[in-house]
Image 1 (cartoon, rainbow, N blue to C red):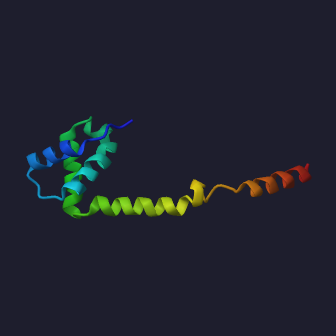
Image 2: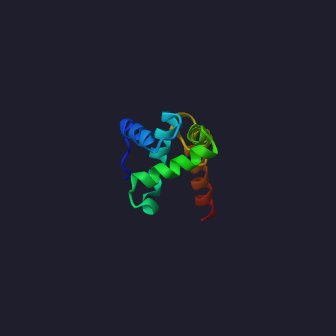
Image 3: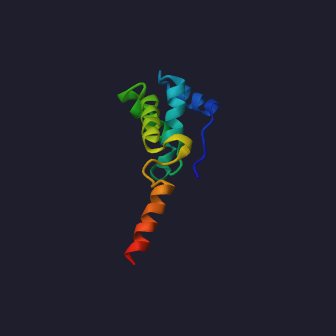
Length: 103
């Protein structure tokens, strides 16, 4: 389970690095890039460098990433949290009925 970085800690790191990134974007980036702990060996500075590299590419990198993840989630998950790709209960019953008839 990955540990979260607080907004206060993220702001301190951003100030220390001297970058002029949006603090909210940097905070999102720091917490997103914690997934690379296997590569960074848990180094917060290395995590900050990964986030910084993405923000240099696009200052809104993490907001865009978050929107894309939300959009993809909406496509996969329908109303009530039901995964659209999963068969509906009535379809499961039809499949079972069909399989029982083939026996």
